[in-house]
Amino acid sequence: MTEAGFHHPNIYAAKAEADKALKDAAALQAALKAATDMLAQAQATMASLTQTADAHTATLAADNILLADLRRDLNAVPPQLTSYVSPTPMTVAQLLTSYPPSISTLGKYARVTDLFGAVDEVMRCRWDGVAYRWVPQRSDRAVVNTMTAGSLALTPLVTAPEIVLTGNLTGNITVTPSATNAWIGQRFQVKRTGLLGLFGINIGGLVGGLTKAITGGEGSMVYTAGGWYAV
Image 1 (cartoon, rainbow, N blue to C red):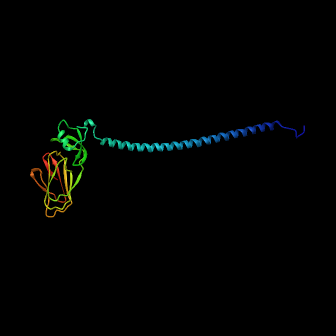
Image 2: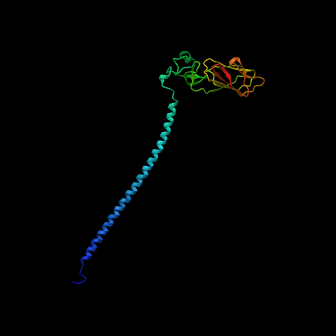
């Protein structure tokens, strides 16, 4: 046999091994590509999960704020309707006439439509150590009065707790708080913005029949078990 026609068996074995190595390399590359694709997909999934988690965290934070607001609102809600003397709103006069403060109304609530002349508010009957009283849950109202002389009666539950006198005086003014329907700790405050001129503003009806002049632009009075005191 000539040299050109001679084929050594080792050549075939080497070729087979080379072909196998190429196939293994191709398979490895395919596996590597598949692994790379899976990693990319996993990273994309992780990013999506992170985004979702962030959204849930933001939603949870908003829910917590909403829950806190709801709890605050619930704490501010008056008791159930069964704790009211009547399911129907009424005027202060109707409340005092139909449901006078007593042991039977103690702890009960009522909704009035004209507290201090115009306020829609909830009242509660309580014992203040001396008597049963209907007391408003809030008592923050101020009104302007343009009177320039005369007498001004301060009536609990009817007159606003704060009164601003804006007129320039043409005569003396006397403000007199009433004890009717007053509760211990109730206050009236009178403020002046108008000019006094030769006149003054006095508080009457105080304990002992005393009268006190309002100086410095404002005067306050508080109701006690003994009556009204200027403070």
